[in-house]
Length: 386
Ligand SMILES: Cc1ncc(COP(=O)(O)O)c(C=O)c1O
Image (cartoon, rainbow, N blue to C red; front, side):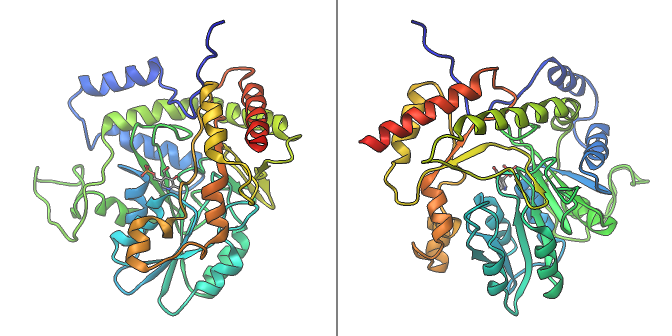
């Protein structure tokens, strides 16, 4: 009998269009500062339903700039969910501000809004809203809290492309947002990110700070090579080749997203009769998920070992991931710097131990969701019996 086909957790969907687009850039005279990045920004802004989009080298770079251009710095505190990618917290650290971690809601993995309000103090300046695995939280309530305390709302929309709240897409749900185009995301540029905002001045500042703090873009320079530098900016630009990949991916995005939604539904239907597993609903309140992946959570009592389940799935050719492997404050860097201890973020710590991220991307073939669901249920039964 032949080995079953391997289903990776994620696979970039790169085809002839992306290859041709990169080849065209490489054959031309302009590898940065060119029309592809500009075109990508215009089209991405239209897709996200926002006024401005600024391409950057990664989501992390975008999160850093989003805080930096608002003057977040030493002495400031920024609320960060305890369960997220470490990039969300690192962006705060880059500004020499202090991340204040808040536990998450056990039904969504999003910021616990009660705990959020309790964590706001006199030095709090901003809230990092992570749409956990692509599902926005109750943004009406979150924005009301932000308004009451005069806080900036930064969306970490790394996994939230096309997610929405009350019909408004992620990217336009706060003051400023950052998306990721890392290879396993909804679409890729290999590495890359996009900052979105409806505020022209914020977009202008992000654009300047991603390019050394120059006072003029290449196009604005009347004398070639002559510019002034008005701020300590960074080099967080996106190259033309990356942007060309992004443009080709955007043209395919509708198909990718439809496949994700269908795969998510089929996989979640297949797991519905498994009492041991909990799955976060992809639509909660007015929030609608981007279906980044399906995370199946094992029970809190720890009776079923995740390593065992994941190893069995691997042996059956099914790739998984974990979002995320630790509550961020318990990663060594944060634990040692701020003295956080195990037990302070019970929901985030449970998720870190118990969640298994399953593939739903457009790389799946018909029948794969059923195969994944059946393999997972069988693995859980074996692990439970051990
Ligand atoms: C929630 C979240 N934020 C930020 C990032 C970092 O994105 P990038 O690799 O584009 O910097 C990730 C990466 O997976 C993520 O999951």
